[in-house]
Length: 203
Ligand SMILES: [Zn+2]
Ligand SMILES: [Zn+2]
Image (cartoon, rainbow, N blue to C red; front, side, top):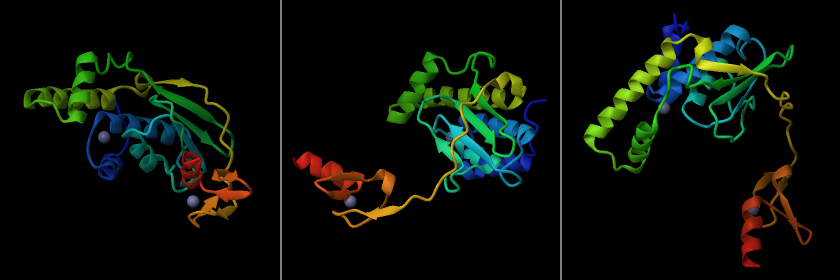
């Protein structure tokens, strides 16, 4: 049982991401759910809203066809391992939330501390080995679990509106064309956000 995706697709996701890790495995399983339940953006327009910008999002892009560049991958910074998917055709949607408990635990405090040390570059060789072993085992657990045991399926929020091409305005300071909705006004002039912030700090 476990992940039913073709090995080829899993390899594609790993190659795109650059390494194998538990986060990627989470995204692979989310992508598997989408392919089974909604199809992919190659056949129909699928929209994804991801509440994290971590590793798993790379697998979601490869497996679902939802990408930042196409505008059908939306990042909502909530710091959660949660992913919502929508099929525009019939409005079918779901929000997948990772459930560590159903998977038997996930990273404990000791492992969390090792992740931090690793990021800070203060991890010892033995500690790195403990962390690597955990990552390998955790990724395996995620890949071998039933999909029902990886995510809790909840109701997704409202479907995001279609991306529109916004008018651009040239910033009065740097001269760079800027999407109208991202500009700010000061004394009758229009600035990009960076130039507006600079002017404001000088006042
Ligand atoms: Zn990763
Ligand atoms: Zn500017």
